[in-house]
Length: 154
Image (tube, rainbow, N blue to C red; front, side, top):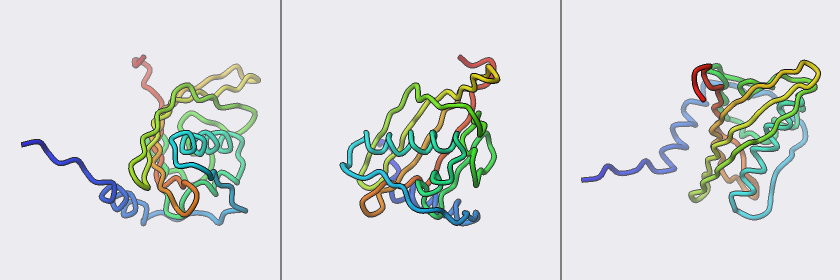
């Protein structure tokens, strides 16, 4: 007999319980991605989060739920830079691959990205899984986990 798949509600409850142990900073005015319910909208939220985070822009905070849990390279991140391999400053982010799946009011995005700093001639790669929840008319990030590949991985 096949095993039942976990339900999105179970996932949300699990993330919420884990996030209950963290605190978040006060956020500036809100930026939201609104419109349709398609995967392009969710991917736009993730792209915006990566871009604002790399710039150190506090408006990135408005893309996250109050109880969001963000982990980068095995460390809880409560402020920028949230994503693994990213350093705040003159660098820029490029998304190299993204795939969004939506089920009801929950979406998850798998994203590969590169951070470049031309002044330092430095580049870092990262991979993230971002879980979003539809809240009102916009998507909010409720969990993000990012890491960098190990040196021996392709």
